[in-house]
Length: 401
Image (cartoon, rainbow, N blue to C red; front, side):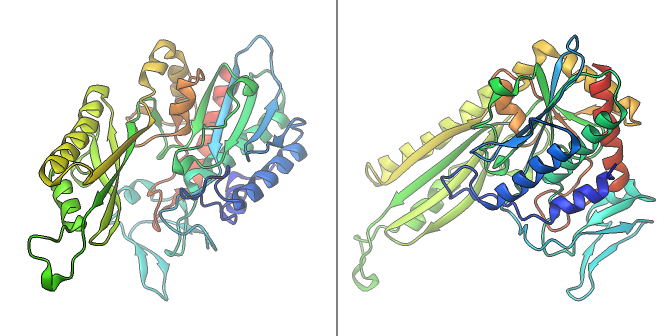
């Protein structure tokens, strides 16, 4: 059987970055390359119905005891657009403490003083990058752990639940569940393997929306601009200043929501601000969306109707209300974590997963740890030993059902 480490290193060699500006599914053709490779690997393992559909989703089944529930295991194939996912130079570093030199030539270090959690991993083997790309543990670690556990279940035989495997594209741009075939998948409940440090289980996530504000002005030669020019860029700055200064990601934690300015562009005649809006509590989430509208209304009253056009679009909602009626799903995962030597800890996700949308589509789907840390950046890492414990956790979930 292939070790989870070597399987993971094979997968991160695929550049699978998604692209929010694309309207195709998947958003990038390169995701299909990994999807096709995974489908073939699953067939080679003995998963006869393994396949990739026309939208780039990969599915397969490991038959089990028909008297047991059917359990889904889901991970996503794409990596974040926030950092390069091409030409990843991953290596395994035996970690005994202190700082890790990722790139001697460019003097890039993973420093314990900046990433305090490194102290928890002394004596382990950390898979790291060369400091110029992300690693892709989000979520190729989940894929590697699922397929390593699947290989073990097939090789060992014995009684276990039927397993439904699903690998999705475009999770990082919020589309991973859009074309997921919940009915065809056929699971009673599922888990996304898309979390962080070992022991983490998540069944509360942000309510999420995106917002786009387009500001229109009037350009006049600056030499003759008095009482005539309307600078859309300055109006955009005024709009941004109307939002609560303390409700930004850099000032919040835990259950605290935020407005996050993620994009801005413009010139005198037209400017655009792009936001994401997040809050765990639905009442506060709706209040945040109303604050955006109030700010837009104020600008239009001050400068004239049509000065700003605001569009707000809901992305996903907190899965908590879908999971609470079937908390045995969470309890089963926690017992499996204990059996794998972990200390379970339920934590709110300051983000979202495919599982949030899938839960609202009728497939209860909390999110489980994979062991990785510092996702979406150049200092991402994952301990080999923690990946192995996650494989054990998966096996315990399937056999203990």
